[in-house]
Amino acid sequence: MMSLRRNKAFLCCIALFFIVATLAAAVDPEPADAAKEEPKEEAPREFPEKKWGTYYDPSNVFCGKHDCYKILGFDYYSKDGQPTKKEITTSYRSLSKRWHPDKNKDSLAEKRFMKINKAYKILTNAKKKTEYDHLRERPDEYFYKYGSTMYQYAPKSDTVFVILFLLIIGSVFTWFAQKNRWQQIANRVVKDAVDGLKQGEGGSTESIGLRRKAEEEMKEKKANGFIPAGSFPMPTSKKAKMKMTKKEMKEMENEELRPLITEMVNEITDFGAGFHQPTWRDLLIVRMVFWPVHIGTGITWQLKYYARRLSKAELNDDEKEVLTKRAVGPVAWETSTDDEKKAWLKQELWVMENLEEWCEMQEVKQLSKKQQKLYAEQKKREKNTKKRD
Image (cartoon, rainbow, N blue to C red; front, top):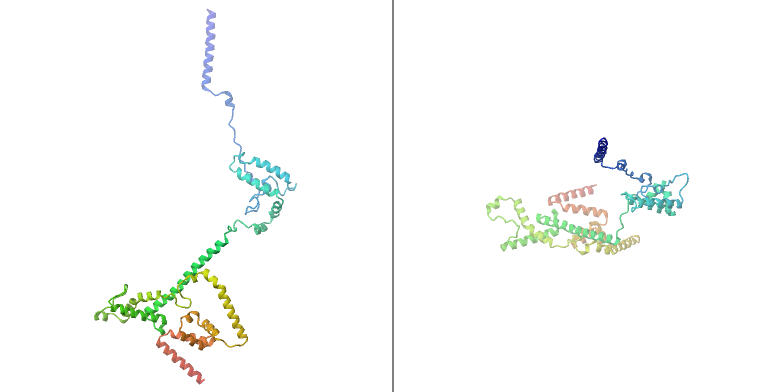
């Protein structure tokens, strides 16, 4: 009995041991080896650019802002002297393998690999290396030869295209400039004709003729019972006429004639003295073709003129005409009548005193009749005073 009880107690102890072991495994399921493993730390990221030094190379002719020597792990100012070509090649192979984009997953690996290649090409080329070493401490020479990023040559353009473009722009400009010249004279003629200015009031023969022609045409149209669009009907009753002043009647008549005068002026293509409506001859390209002819003709005439003056020959008719035209101006010459031109030639306006007197008379013609009389009286007094003296 005693032995049986001992066996039961032994079995109970063994069962209790297994129960405790099972409970311990459930509480800590991880194996002992796993508890001993520690998390691996990532390797710190490299930044070799911090050791690449600096160099003045704003145009990126060599290695940019970095030193080609330090990129490959050398020092230009080292006491041991400059590296040999063999040492440069050895360092290049080592660094290129290390930073090759296929082997190094760093985001900047490709750029660093390209910098290493560039440094190797510079330092293994004798001519480039000599220039690189020479310009190291001479930024002024570098700037003179390669410039800077602030001042760069623009991309090369097609010269023929540029010249054609400029000629087209110039031709458009000369066409509109000629149109503007004609328009200025046309506006002045319209204004003078509408205002009814006479010869002594600033009106030209052209504006006076247009005014007269417009008045005749208006009379014919009114006789036929037709009033042009935009014109003002004149009052017919005596009371309405009495209420209007002479000035108002004149203004109404002028505005009535304005459309007719404007239409007549627009039909005039050439006012003379170069004031004409633009044509193909006014394009810059066409003018340039005739420049040599005009310049050659002008120089030839001038040389002949000086030669005749040195030989003390008298002025011929051609020289008198050219000198008079220069004196009065091309506009006045072209717009004048044949009688006026003959009178100017007789006055010898190429002489300064005669020209001053002529200019004074032109200003007097712009005055009113009353002012012209006062001017004539003043001139008589001056002549009488001179005779007495």
